[in-house]
Length: 307
Image (cartoon, rainbow, N blue to C red; front, side, top):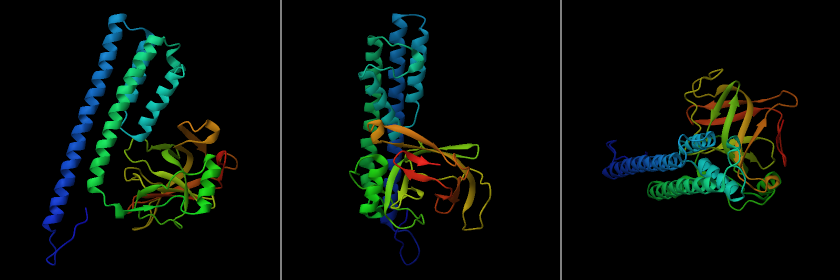
């Protein structure tokens, strides 16, 4: 945290007090997360015991369903996981099978799965609200800036890609990224990048970077979120203060809602260079913790990211 310093170079008492408040709120959020995870585990255990009483041993279908629910419940409390729960609940209410590997699910089992997902969703909502209240106390609103849909051209690009006009601007924390201008159209929330034979996942983090394009729909950029790649070995290290070359980007995955999928929450993936083999490269600024795409021959069209 940056603090105001007095002439002797010591941090003031006000700054120390603010730092202690932030640390206390972080500890509170960690304790809350731990309690919520314990409640989710207990709900899953209760469901297993209820099924075991009805039929012992558990059927193969119940084993598959419990495995999928445990996999979902063990994910971090992120927006992507919350949207995944909503999609499963929507399938259940439409009498569709949310777990194809489990086969045909009986109505009574559907109701039990729906009840578990409802309790899981409630836990996520509680976590989100508490986190939001804590953020209001610690984040300075002046430290944010608008980076999306600021111009009519950017709004037009958004409408072309998503099939609908943007409802609001995209607000993200201030970034030290060296980006061309401030007019960008949002593509979606970054889920993963496949660089060479390595897949970098972002959906497990609390803050996913936003994939945007410029007002001319010619290039992709990453804004906000956690773009820290310090644990990944680059193909070519840059000079001090320069960019690391992480390698060729084979595939990009992002979460979005588009008209041709009836605006259902969907994770889309695009193979880069699939038509002519010309792929962009991922560069990384270790000082700013910022990713950049350079090169490539891709185009941004209504059907998605082409080539």
